[in-house]
Each structure stands twice: as C-alpha cells, then as structure tokens.
Image: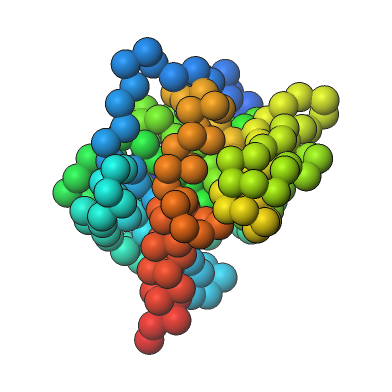
Length: 220
C-alpha cells in the first residue's frame, strides 16, 4: 500500500495495524548480515509540517555514508499508537532518497512494544521488507531495572507478554527500550543497539537523526 492510499480515519488505521501485525517476523534469517544501518526520525516544525530524516551508517565503523532530510505535511490526527500514519510517508520518502541501501532500520520509537504489537518499527519493516528495530527513550510497558553495567537488560512486558527489553548501553545511565520491528530476533536487536552505542546512551543512528530533525524543525 502506497502512503498516499493509507487510511484517513482512526478506525481504518487501527484495522490496518491489526491486519499487518500478522505479517511481522520475529526471528533473524540464519544468514542475516548487517553492514549498513539507517537511523530514522521525524521532527515537527508545526503541528502539520514534518521533517523526515534517514541517516545511513557503516555498521562497523559508524561512519556516516549518507543522510537525507525531507519535509512534508500531514493531516492525520496526533493519536497515541497511530504515529506511523503521520510519520511514515515522510520517512519513506527520505529512505527512498539515500544512495546507500541499509541492511537494518533503527526507528526512534517502538516496535512490538505497542498496544497492538505494531509500532512504527514494525510498520516500516513490513512495508519495506527490511529488518527493523525500535529504540525508544521511554518505556511502553513495565520492566524491572536492569543491572548498572553496560549490556545489562531486563524484559519489557505488556499484558504478561515480553515485547522488548530495557537495555543499559552505558554504565550507570538510564536504559533505552529495544523492541523487534521485523525480520530480527530480540537478542540480535539488542546486540546491534550495543554495537551502535559505543560511547553514549543513545545509538549513533538515533543521535545523528535527532540532531538533523531538530535542525530541520528550527530552520526558517
């Protein structure tokens, strides 16, 4: 489904999420190789003007290989659990314009940690067919604090189901919240986030995308 044909009502959007959630794959292919990683984020200049960012990194060196910022407008209402319908069209435009194809998408948001188990990372992954994960700054669900050391983690739970993990990326800092989007398992997703966060709490994909969205949102 093209973003231009996406639902315009809340009821139709929820129905689409319920239908597409059955297509999510929560395991990694045996030969999954991740050489390039894209960070995706959206910034808001106004309630209906959005900037979508896609930054592609070399997964080993964390060197930026390409980055694109695209502006667009949205008329879908701002409703928790349905952010993808505001943000995906501009993100897909940005993803389409990068010159280096990513092997993994890292969304600044949720994957399975979502009321219908179909957050932005899931929607991006199912739509594109690219393995994807969600890395959120805040928890969607409940968790016990992980240990204080880098790499410590604990289950993130919603309605008695494990939907992700609270992951400590640096010693003594607040955890981030990792959930599967599509075509990757939770262990591999957490390992990739740790690889992308060698020095700071947030993975480099999120840090750079955040910077570009703030710049775009504040530009005249």
